[in-house]
Length: 454
Image (cartoon, rainbow, N blue to C red):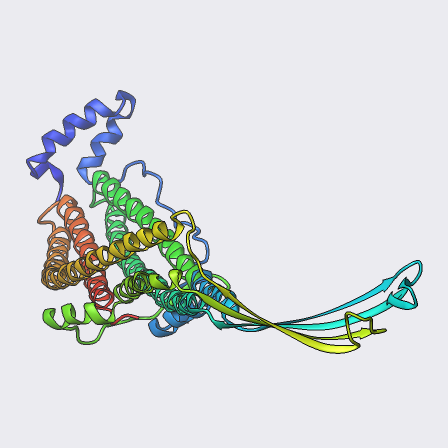
């Protein structure tokens, strides 16, 4: 079919007269007459760098392995573990005040002469003194409660580290799903490019055979190059997604992801219940509030007396009238804190304020957790509906592309309809891939919101 029989022929002729110099008017007329004309530059195949598909084989991890490796190797997770050890060491320091201490000392003294009184040597010109000192807190209620409170902080640190690991696992899960999404989008872009290439090959063959026109050839070439740009951009996006996953799992380079599907999801009421008992951030806030309450309830220990024992055996050579050669001494020390300028009252007020803040944080965290569950559940339901519609749209768009291509090859339409159908098919497939990713992420969000992940 020639464009002279189409109502667009006059428009194309006018555009050709305006856009093409008069010296090439004879050739421009041939564009629409179906005769061979001066060809445009033929789109060349780009020299793409090696990707994960065609280049070196990438390490591919399952979802569970990727999450576990992230938790085992990622510096953020290791820092959280180190924080637990730090609080454990602080507890050991606090505990030291409630346990006995033992020390030894040695002293050698040299004088210029003996110190005498009459015929009695009060202090010889040289002497060696050895002693061991034991200090034991017999009654130290304040130290005991501080020891207990330090242990509470270790428990809080453990639960906080668990929440850090939860956040890190969710981040790794999203990175894993991002690789799946980008790979799916790459397949869509490659399919669109291949369709555009097939259409260009047909139109170009028609042009060279004298039964096509140059306008169709130009349109097809433009669509092919556009799809090639999108394909290269998507290759880059997939590369970055794999690199991001590799960083999280502490790999040697880019990491590829396998396919992943989630199992049965919890119902809304079950998810709300789980969020209050399983989520690590809720448990950490509750532990912190409980620890703060303990400091308030045990404030009485600051006002109690304490009793210490100090015992010291010794060896003195030579013995002197006031110090025998061997012996020991023991002392009981009773301390009663009477007045400290109001320090204890200020500390008590501070602890009360912290306890109140802790309960407010628990309430806020619970409210946020319940909101997260409701939002994730709604997101999952909407994503599933959208996914079904997106798949239908993609099937319709693919069918429309096939019909448009058949009509064009039969001479019933111009390739405008083919190109438009190809773009719609590409967009529909892209939307389907995005919807698939949204459905997967919604499930990950729901599991994380309920505390069932990781």
